[in-house]
Length: 266
Image 1 (spheres, helix red, strand yellow):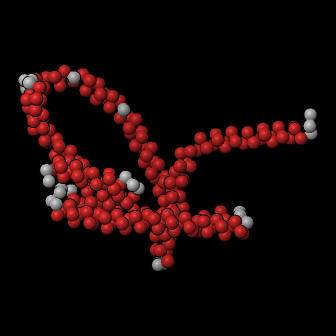
Image 2 (tube, helix red, strand yellow):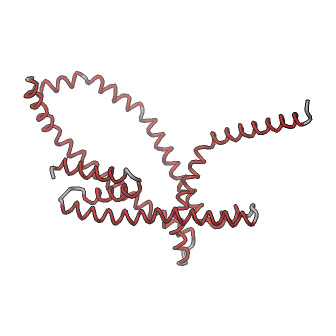
């Protein structure tokens, strides 16, 4: 046996063991790692605004809290507007269902020579009530799972907010701790890469937010001129999706106002 073979076998065994332990740790901690990555991205995006406030004599903690509260407020306004638009459209659609059903029934009777009546249609629908009851019972059984999922999402959101706050508020100290274990040349490269990441991430998001504002204002004026309901919510929807979702965001954002206009008969 060559003298190097036992050492090579031992080295291969150590490499395989280390790889297995690393893979096991990654699988066990993948949710935490994902939360940390999301928090790091958000911290990089918020840090330019925090640095601007810090240069204007704001402490980093209150500056980070103020920026995060502003982001949360904008998100709440966006989703509340979309929610009010969705509820309004659903109620409007529900009020139109009887007339739509009668018109569809008349078209079926005229086209296919049938003689269905609304009473017959209701009887046929009631015959499938067993399936509806089974579906409703399935929903009731899944309420516990839905509540658990909601609690998990709430915990993850709070964890992301906490990590983001500390990564952004203690960003300089965090970078000093990392660079303290690196050689001087590597320290300069790490700091340079970190500053570039902050500038590019923040610049992209802030420029997109400014474009979303201009896009939303322009669409709001057009929607008001066309007398389309929910103009503010639709303009907000178009502005955000068209700027923050590449390529298809413009089409998705523009499809909803068209559908609303068609439903309202504009």
